[in-house]
Image (cartoon, rainbow, N blue to C red; front, side, top):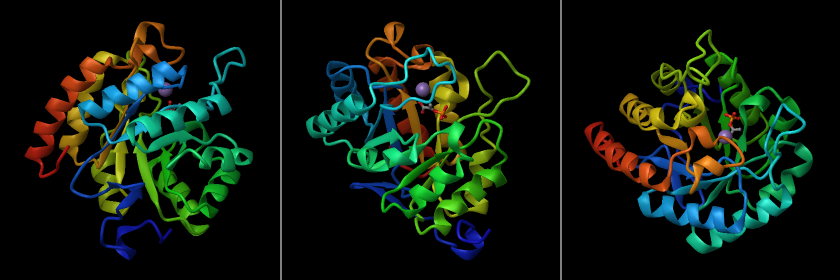
Length: 269
Ligand code: PEP
Ligand code: MN
């Protein structure tokens, strides 16, 4: 491993997502629904998170689901709705790429590709985004070590694409009270070992909406470069991950606190 290590590249990499820098003094705040469900839902959420201070819109069009009976996203229609939300708000888009065969259609809408936890070791997919000329948000596999996450990033970089942001989203442990155990050790560790920016996802990391603001504040205090937060206009009726989604109002309150913590550690939000 060389390309992603700080010893070979002492300066922190600033990944540019459209106009939004990830890794500079300002935090990248990616917020939006787990899944795109309708034009009204994604546009209303996009407007609300932008007003509260988000600078990138998240939303899944292709959803990775283990159960073949679960909602798999609106797929191409979801991409079309994300493009509308982008046009309405100007927010760049992060959305998951599940399949290398979709790289062109997802790439036509995504400003940064999300590689999900379940695909951190999908080497075909990593090689494909490595050849792409677009940034990548690489989520940690739910049972992957930090070195394995860095090796997956190295694989993307080795294929020519160094525009990578790493994402800690919680790991599987013996603990069942929370969906995952958010490993905030990852933040200082990855920041010291690698020059790549680090994003924290306390939504999947906890699985409980009421825990999300606490862990978001902790992540910013620990020195992350940004947050990935699930926000839904009506979490009780969300088609996926409603139990860990903030309402626009609670997201806005979270952002007020995040701004104060960011200022305390020399960052802006
Ligand atoms: C998501 O961001 O909605 C998602 C599926 O995340 P993960 O890959 O971390 O489970
Ligand atoms: Mn989700």
